[in-house]
Length: 236
Image (cartoon, rainbow, N blue to C red; front, side, top):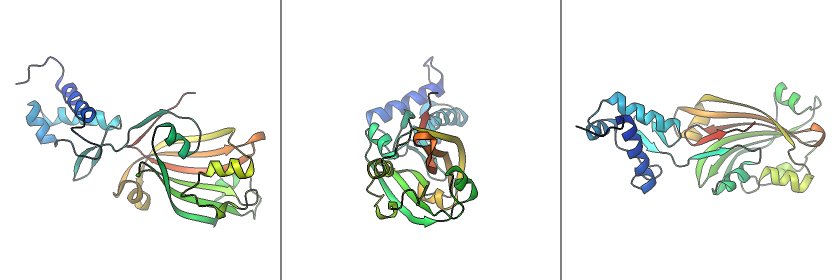
């Protein structure tokens, strides 16, 4: 019987945290199963699940249905500042990379066109990428930009280049202000397969409109981040 005065669920949390910090449980590796933890701590499955839930909510663990609970590949917990993905990852000591899924001219819905203050027939540049940090998929990003204002964007390789660096370097524009909507969603279908390798998962969705000087819109974007790997602390 466990005689430690600390609550059992807290002992489980501390044991798993210690295992992660010491390297006993490496990133991407499964932790002991719920039945194993029940036997180890002589406790109920409800108590074990409570402890695991707490660590999942912190982003330290993630569940894969039918396979078990694993140590998160990345634990990104930072005060959010509006920069490009590459700058944000570099500031965290991560190596950013991208895989382009689509680049070129495309149709944009009325909301996007309104956000960008486009003329009725104005062409739109579209970019869809998987964003990675240390080779792990973190986000799927969709960006819409006026091709009339920025006509050469289709010529760049955005698997290698930062979009915001190109806009600053080639066009002399940078984000002065960003309007954002942030909410948690259940992601399904193709995006879930790309981000989670599963039929569905929890994602953090960030919808943004970036503005330059004089509050002239530069870009609209919809990004979904893996809820098990990315946490935003926002200071207002």
